[in-house]
Length: 329
Image (cartoon, rainbow, N blue to C red):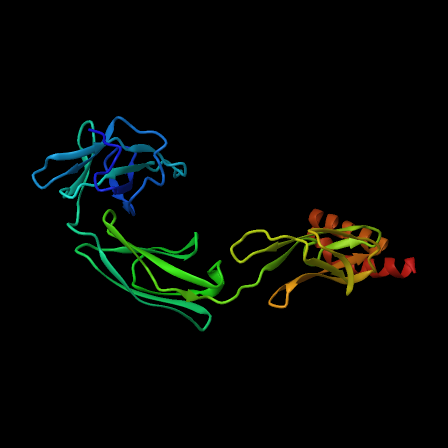
């Protein structure tokens, strides 16, 4: 029987990998959930997933999604199919049975109770977030850890086997007051716990210069496009009206992602991009580029062409270039 609603308002997220020939199944990391987060796109009527009680009676049955993995191995190796189902939970359930029309493929016993998990520590020191929790359960556990701030969240650890972790603050996309959430799962039964609030400190936006590239060369007569961006610690693009371009120490534009500069002096020029939103929120980056005169530019193109055509010509090119410069003068 198929029942779209879990009597207790909870589902077992059952996920695993089945070999193409149906001879081997591997249970992946599943958990208990109050809602269906990833509805199967389609179900396969040739398979079924049953929740059984202690006497082997079927309490509920669903049709899982079973489909080929989009990232298939090459070289004739066996393909795998992803199995996904949300099985409504019943308190009297003791095991889960995954079957085809011909045979039982996999059977997994269920722990009588979910894991017990308690936070022991979550604090920031020495440029890192230090986490420690303890858990107790009748089966082996793995953990997933996320950091949350209001309605936003980011995963920090997945399929983690320990109960202590040190996370560099540079890898955390939030600033200010946050909490950590740990999920403990045996593959089906699970429990989550939220830590006390901690402060990861202020984080500044990051300036990015997309054009020009570091050490890029141009002709002295070329115009140079300037393209930049301002990225928040969580990866979002920020308003660009605070960006300021400087070329060779001279302001070249303010309040935009794009800029343009012409008539660069021959030689190296430094291009800076900065954000000055406030004294507490600043960012800065720079690149060096080089402008060449027409003779150098022509010989650089010829050098590249000859080097690709015959690597042995590379040794004589510096002498040729010096001779051509003197002749040009």
